[in-house]
Image 1 (tube, one colour):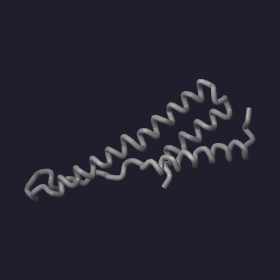
Image 2 (spheres, helix red, strand yellow):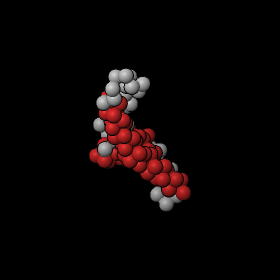
Image 3 (cartoon, helix red, strand yellow):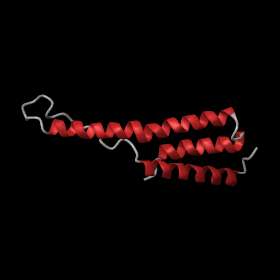
Image 4 (cartoon, helix red, strand yellow):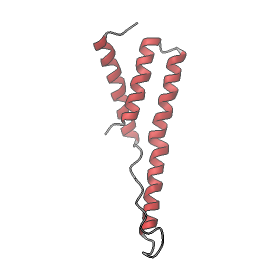
Length: 107
């Protein structure tokens, strides 16, 4: 599945770039926002998911009498892989261009 977060922020940045210009401060801001969101989707959240996997395994191996042995498992699928983020970017670019062409909203 492509990353919907990556698709959304990429579509936003491309739309702003087409409307305001790719040299505008608004486009630069949208690009920085997109980069932060995509970094979070791939880097931070993916590693948090891997940590959750390890913690769940540790809790699973605890003796039954341990107070944490009945702890609800953490969600392990939190982030996206690089191909999912790239696919989201491509989807965002295509979506932005199609929508701007369909709506005829060029300034």
